[in-house]
Image 1 (tube, rainbow, N blue to C red):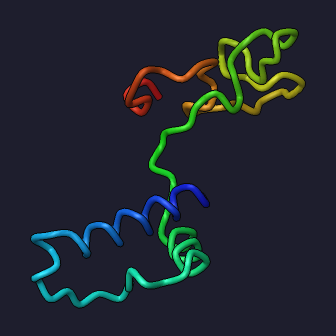
Image 2: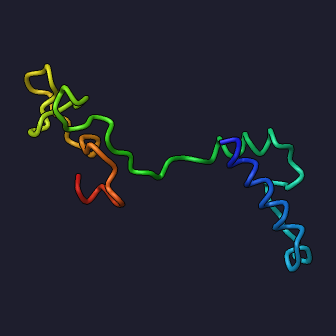
Image 3: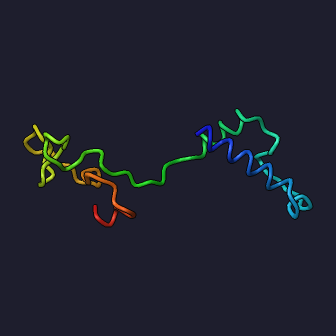
Length: 100
């Protein structure tokens, strides 16, 4: 996150101090003269995950680290099943919601 905050600070500073932007009056809540700590706080307040994480409860053999069997039944339970993308044992290339 610190890297992202530093990149945002640098990008905004360069953007508003480079032609043709320097001639445009800009009114914004974020001033490019903010300290790095202020940028970092702004990034933490605004950044969220848009990733579709998978693999948290892999459907694998229990000996291989799996959490659920091929019927999505959680090992060691009688009737608890995992019914989301977390059972995928690996990350598909894109858009796992179509598989879930």
